Length: 121
Ligand SMILES: [Ca+2]
Image (cartoon, rainbow, N blue to C red):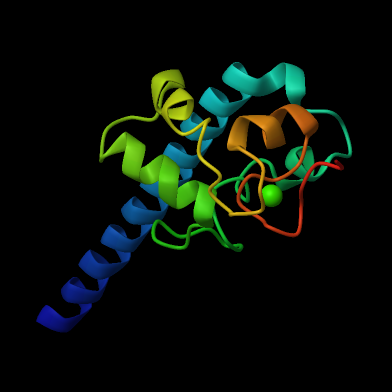
């Protein structure tokens, strides 16, 4: 009798967790688009990474599976809600260590969390 209830509880928690992650992702993507929308050139590495892979390392996205840019954004957010100030705080960093700052990559449409994606010199 207790076992089915336990599984129902576990399933409910799993659904709640996934829903929370999806909601956070959508909100974070909205902040990113609102902040950098003018730089999201169609077909660019950065535009193709949206919505999830700008910060996450693979799909399906998990809370801890972050690329170097996502790690830096997470540190800057420090557990608080992502906003334009958080994104601004990591603009001067070179999260993926490819020689270009995050903001230079975003302006060029390349991926600030992927060292294989960088602006042409
Ligand atoms: Ca890069």
